Image (cartoon, rainbow, N blue to C red; front, side):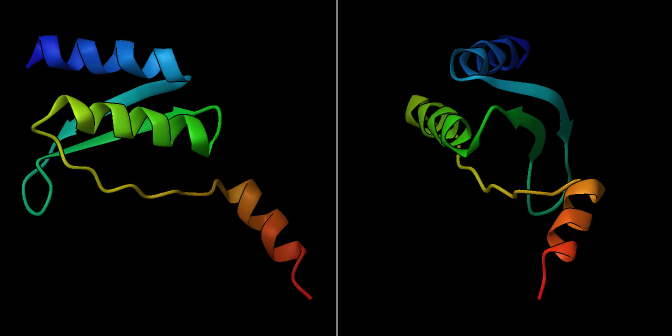
Amino acid sequence: MPQRRAAARELGKKFGVDIKAGYLAMGTYDLIIHAEATDDEAMAKFLLSLVAIGNVRTTSVKVFAEADVDKIIAGLA
């Protein structure tokens, strides 16, 4: 597992993705990774490359920081 974790971090760097933390989970998901990317395209490339290696399925969730939420709400008509 440590080797796969290190390989995922290196793969992420290749696409501009920084894996901030990884968590072993119990329930629907076995592993939850907090990662940040330069943009959505970089994250998509990283995830597609990770899945192509095999034995991994992903579910992605994009989140917004509170400051970004405030900007979004301020822009509502």
